[in-house]
Image 1 (cartoon, rainbow, N blue to C red):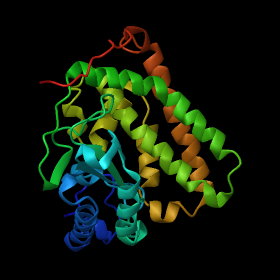
Image 2 (image 1 turned 135 degrees about the vertical axis):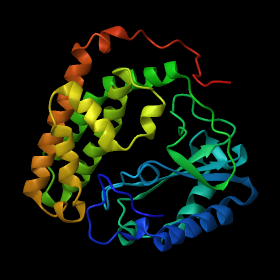
Image 3 (image 1 turned 60 degrees about the horizontal axis):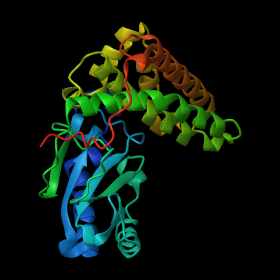
Image 4 (image 1 turned 90 degrees about the horizontal axis):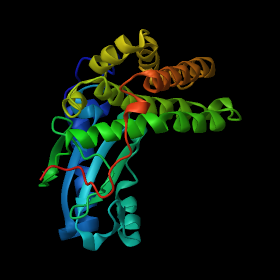
Length: 284
């Protein structure tokens, strides 16, 4: 996998995950762990998110992977049975994210016959199948707009929780909270662009830089871009408490601005009726 130009490609040498050999090592290790754990109950593996769209930030971004398995291996739509959980971790857990320049390998397990109803599925252009075959249902535009409203309503509570956790952390413990703040802000940028009238499915195929430009134009500030610029050299920034405090404050103020725009705009909070009960939101 080749590194692309964009928000995450400022290091002189690409981290392992952005090299063909590094990605191949991860892919082979994951496939081995899945097949040896789930056997014939495993159906497919997909890679989604920043590595696919080209806005991966070394050491800051996750590698987002979804494993689809048959119901016999699952306790629920997103929870494998305990014996599979323990076995997979024992086979995959020796892969060190730091070695590959990633924050973590985020592996979700999904029941291929019982997809979570209120969870947005991977969208065309945001993922690729790396093994097996899976038919991922396409959500309706109405479902995606409803999800955008839900996210924007919940964002202030997520950020308040981070402030609560941040206040008593030692300097060595604040980097994960700054990173998590970035994880919360990124979807908000896309959700707000959706509510501004952009294609609610197509917007998710665009790299973060492009969507930041849309959102910042509506906000009238460039502080979101400043936050993501600030975390680009994350390998070094994560060891600098003063910079981390600055970024945390900047990110929280960005969240406040996003929430204020959502609350005040005629297309925002007051425009959204309660979701209809029982609506799955997927096109047949």
